[in-house]
Length: 307
Image (cartoon, rainbow, N blue to C red; front, side):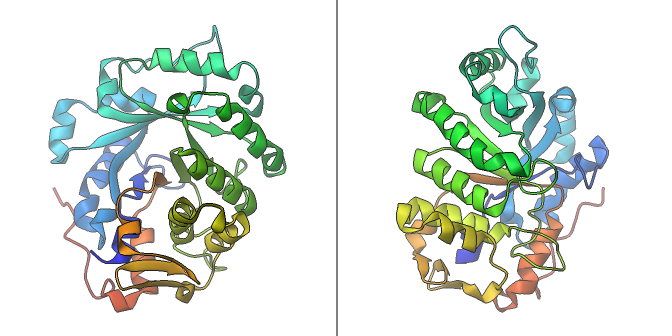
């Protein structure tokens, strides 16, 4: 496996039901099941299909058997519950999910948050779901929200801290500088991370209109984990917003951005980061175009499902 393969291994889950793809449930499920045959880099797939909690019950044994492989799901819910409020009820079908993602408004991260998390965990109890919280902020609110998020998480025992989900485009988008601060704080605390929206492209490009490249984001997480504060927040922001593909190098089993390099052993294993995307063809094709020396562009995708 090449170092670039290692970097993007199991990086993406598939959210084809959500905008901008907005595919019907059946079509998105079939597309998800066929990704390992349709992509040049099938190892990019984290084997996770994102659906709403209301559709989780439709992932029956028969439906999964039709997919022909062991499909896992990430269940996406609404706002995280407050004490005494409504709670998600995954029921028996929750066994088919690996995580639950709940949005939370900024004021949820104040005093009621601990009890609200207890209510959410109780509602999901016994299902084995990992929990992610997605703070909903406007761009102007994010600088203050970053500190609020970590003050809240630091009050929780380390084993009870949820992962964080962040959006990189749209009304609740986090900017690159604030994203770098959140990623640094999350990595330093050993938290799981998920990012979505606006991350179809490996590097930043004017034609793509993206502010963050998924290649720089993925490498930033690993560099921070290895170098700690030696890979500073400004350096992380620079890596995430890099628009020059040649600044990323993959040689001798390692990966580097500028002078920050990871060896082969440091690339092994998961990074604690998942990227949600409604298309995996775009990330796959983007990598093939940027790094033709790896032979990806010459290698056609595997035969897609036709049945």
